[in-house]
Amino acid sequence: MNQGSIFAGFGGQGLLFCGHVLAEAALLEGRHVTWMPSYGPEMRGGTASCTVVVSDHPIGSPILDRADAVVALNPPSLARFESVVAPNGLLILNTSLIEAEPSRTDIRVLALPCTSMASLLGDVRLASVVALGGLIADTPIVRPESVRRALAEIVGAKRREILDADLAAFERGYELAAPVSELITEVYA
Image (cartoon, rainbow, N blue to C red):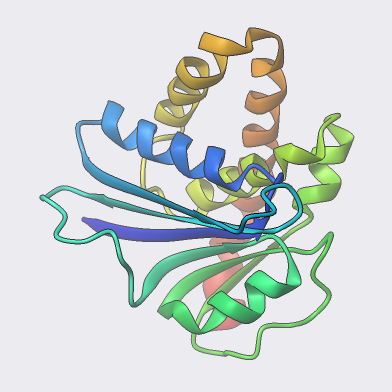
């Protein structure tokens, strides 16, 4: 298995954190992993992305020409990264902020209201964790329990008071995507 994912959006949406959680979950499963963040000088509100590669074998490079999955949490991220999704790859769209439809028909699309769900859970920065739940429901890169453990280790070590919200955001994204992921191939194939 060799799975490359890109998480992209505005700084402050938790993208780097989300990539870190996926990377830690993969490490907990004994996988090889790279995590490469990228962000503009503005930090919060500027553009941000990270690339996570998870593999059963040593990874030669953290750079992806093609991603198996892209999480786009804002319109500029859709514009920039839609072309990077591999054919039959997954594009997760945050429908709370993205109204445009993807232009490609050779990819799978999972539309989730990430920001709205995060807001209902009390913190819009949880949008990326909602998207991570959707990603893991559709593409089991790691086991859901590994993500829960990674969240507990990363968040619980520093801010135990917000761990429940992170876990709830992951579960909500997973639940929203689970029934959709069964039909997604038929709709967008």
